[in-house]
Length: 143
Image (cartoon, rainbow, N blue to C red; front, side, top):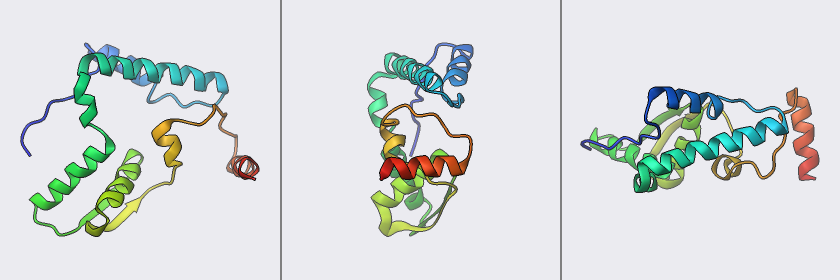
């Protein structure tokens, strides 16, 4: 508890907005777009590394899950009741993995490939036009 040091990755709001448009909020469909997204993500990470340095070693999902457990204890609750959307899905799963004995009612709004989420896709692959096409592609890739 107490104050914290924010991670600042950009000097101006305009730089931040441009990075978010080309990285975080850029949905990839084609292999070329996936490569562009990877390059934008690398530039984003490099910018954060230059400005935040060693602080980045302490802002992982596991660190946030530990913070959640501190907050749970601070309010006197024996259990964490949690609903996670988007990144919150991964955060809730991480909390449960670290503190399963204190996790109670937990809802995740979606599933994801945790290996892709943590390490990035194993190879660039376009997003199929339909769920059926996607399911067939995943099934044939795992066969």
